[in-house]
Amino acid sequence: MTRLILIRHGETGYSERRRFCGSSDPPLSPRGIEQAHKIRERFNGVGINAVFSSDLLRARRTADIAFSGHDAGVTVSRALRELSFGVYEGLTHEELLSLHGESYMRWIEDPTSSTPPEGETLASLDKRARCFIDGELRDYEEKVVVLVSHGGPIRAIVGRALGIRGKAILSFSISLGSITIVDRFRDVFAVRTLNNTGHLGLLEELEWDG
Image 1 (cartoon, one colour):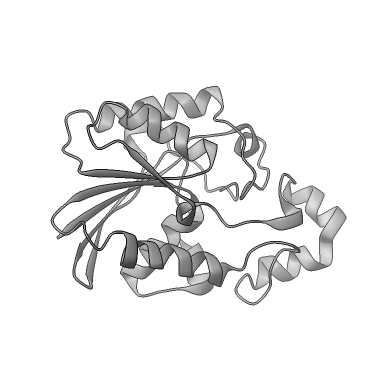
Image 2 (cartoon, helix red, strand yellow):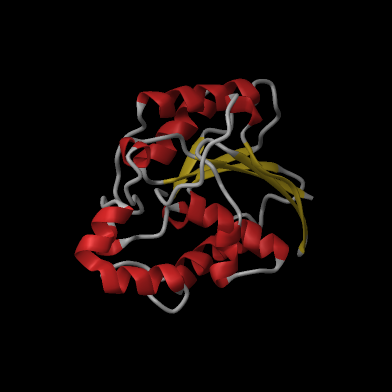
């Protein structure tokens, strides 16, 4: 059995202001750094065999703070980065309604067949996240593996476990600094914990920030 510990990065200035943040690369906010330290406290003394992180700064910094004391080290992978929101990057919901109202509403209503201009399809995100756990992690049977990533890839991996994909993976919340645990035995999955924020001492809101 492989145990996958899926951790969403901490808060950034973009998420604090509810700006779309996919391929953009802002640093953690002070609150995000605090969240990363609380994740570190949660996993102090827990046996971990490998730590992978998205290559984006907010995820790498979260991983470095939370797991710097573990022998495994942090391996960076572009496959774990968030969906690219194209021209929507850095904009708020209100700004998008004003600047890109028609295309934005088409995407909100059907993110599977509609794509942000110059952005990435939900199908592409789903494919690279699934390929990562089916490919990169094939050598980690009987191991405990941490993935520090973003809301989109974590939803896609949970979707793989639950047998759902497309718009359906947006039907559950993955909060900033949250912990989700999925066990895998060959092609059989069990979701043990979903969107746990108890270690943070608060309940984060779902945000479209990546």
